Length: 542
Figure (tube, rainbow, N blue to C red):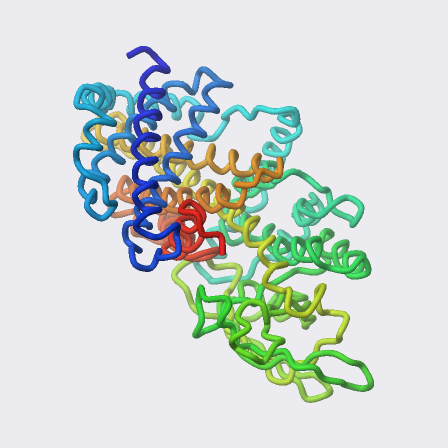
């Protein structure tokens, strides 16, 4: 097959197979209403669709940049055979007879795809990546391409000069993100990227934000890439449902980095079941001011100690049967606390305590378990209407997943960079290990997966910028795929380091530890596959 024909044939074949799988699963799950009766099959299908979207995104990128055609074709062929084998193994769970598979992708087509996957093609990708120093210099297309490329250069420069020298020490000593980094990011406008200019932000596109997030995450996931995502949930919620007075009051200081934001949604006993939240918001009056009294616990509230305000989702309707319709979103002000625990008191008797949970990675942000006891919040801190908090929060969830895809791509890129540089420097048997066939193959494999994650993330960002109906679904797919890529690439990069990959003095050990959190937050992987991606693909939007 000629260049381009291979990828086109692979995409057509997998698209036809996935259409058949979807049709069968729609029948088996009654249009998505009985997903829980077929959880394993739906999860597998959701993953396949996400990978298929990554292959399509790479192909569309190659249409604009012919030099990327080889990479797009290779990924499409690799994915086509991977999808075929998985569907063949689990055809009974999908309700798909073997005859249907053979008719859709016959033996001749399979053989052509298999012959195209020579290990030498992966090694050629590694050589190409090495020519760029294992740094991403991929083209970005579109009318704002020059602006985004300039942003990428600026974010990369800040990451290399300001973040990278501190990243390892922050991780090893479990330090809080230094104030100098917060000030530097604020000066560059990173905290206001999602906030319109009329409210003091820069109002940049989702694509620009993903690109900046990726570059900062190359230097440090928690101390830079994740730091600029702090305002996202609150900003999106305010823009979706806040009053004009609230937007004027809060968005400007958040955009300037004067107010750092933490998010308090998850609870110790609820996890992904947001509708079952039990932290209560009860109407109260304090010193003649009408407001709410907050009581209950929150878990995994990242950056809650240093944060000036928390975006808190609490139950304002005491009836548990109200589910997510009984939740409200509050802006909770608090003092800055720089340690691993804190205990705050209000004059009226309210108490807010927090303790950072020790984690193997993602250090620098500190994730807290919080306890609220009669913590008073003035009435004008309720965002929008009571009982609408879940819906306001949903705007932030989709954007958060998109940003997580960017963060994951950045971590994968950092792992590729670390492995590539080590392979060039480390000598065994008289030559650099990067010259050995197996090492070169691994580097090519990592480069291919990382680029696929990047292009799917960019495609989802463009869809969100264009207001496409499927933008939220694409963001969820990008998050699912890119986070898995980050885990796989970081661990394979660690293996290339040999024993030194397990030594904490080497950055790759930090990258491996940080990557493990990515499939968990912003929608833990199984729930993302089932309740977000699977449900939308199979037709149940309830």
